[in-house]
Length: 219
Length: 219
DNA sequence: GTTATATTCAATTGTTCCATTGAATGATAG
DNA sequence: CTATCATTCAATGGAACAATTGAATATAAC
Image 1 (cartoon, rainbow over the protein chains, first blue to last red):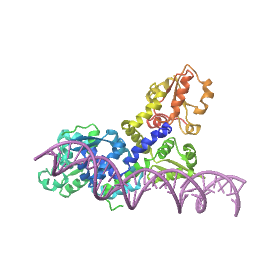
Image 2: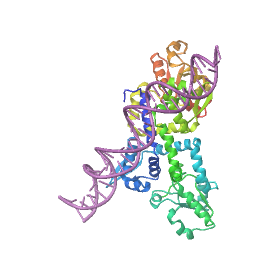
Image 3: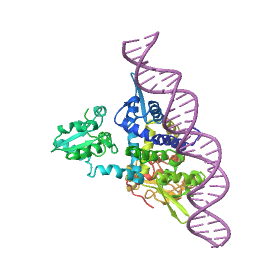
Image 4: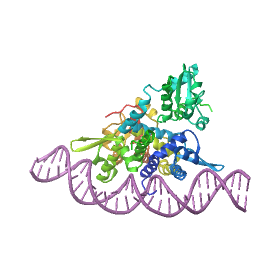
């Protein structure tokens, strides 16, 4: 193992990281952990996968340096090792977006149908927040909202959206966001809001990107 | 396949990209292709691997959108699909550097022994190039040099270094570079030059990074 | 045409990875 | 101390991957 040339030994390690990223469920785990630290239990529930399975994936990721684990009471809480993990995942997404026809097809077939208006940029949103001209909806589950959200955003999980429509001002612009560029919840929210006559748009990307871009986060 | 939820379908695609990056030999191929387009045959020779093997890896990479192939005469020339591929590889390297103890060990055990002085930054080098106060050595093989190099750099492949020592000015600072941060050739060159009493330093990273940072490239 | 060269294909093998299951461990609450 | 809950471990079988070999294809040179 360490008798290899140092260059190959390094490439082995890099490959280990990449290989570990090479499983859809693990990418989903990273997406979740990008929202904040999570217990195995909660992660398994979010993914709808067996706990043992998730536990093993998490351990694989721990061995590859993607996440760290810490015991808290009777829970084991995992978190991303550092910001470079999200960066790597985003870099991989970019490669796929640029070069895989399949991705284009999926995005066109699903996402674009649901949002033919441009998403609002982070810059634009933070400007309009200062002017108070906009209602921001965080459509993620309450627990994710609690761990950090756009200042002033209302937490309206998708399931509660219909029930809370009456509390929204139909004359004010609405911006919805969720977990990231490929999180479907904000698309869904925007599409439902428009059906009801609201002026709704999506924020580009979502929460971890908002924070990563240096914007203020409330909690 | 496409009956999956669109989110999972996307993650499948992202995972495909990552999984394809998850093999040391393929990372080495990307490193090579980062220097410029290459034929299968040449790549196989550079890696010291059987041609059929390399060909299959390249096709795997083609399916994942990492590279493209074009026939030129009797050669098939592969090239990186776009700059995002190198970016993804670098992002993965960064994860490994930050979080894998093993990488630290390798880097410490091998690279740092050989270069206890700081590498020179690209900014510093381009400044000193303007003042003409420095000799730049490109220690990559001639074919890689021919495809693009730092303006004014002399091509001195490692094997020819000793023979050409007499042509170098021992009073001028020397900066050596090669393919990238983990390419050993520039370390080797610097270490040999210092043994002979030259004032040699390494450039941070190497050629593709120099170009990627927007610096001028000669050819 | 025929030959030589570059690349890919196809089939084989051994290896690694993945999901699942049920048992084992660690921590807390009563 | 026991019961309970969260997590991990260990073992299984099935699927995907990787290296090798030899044959097949495509282009160029003669």
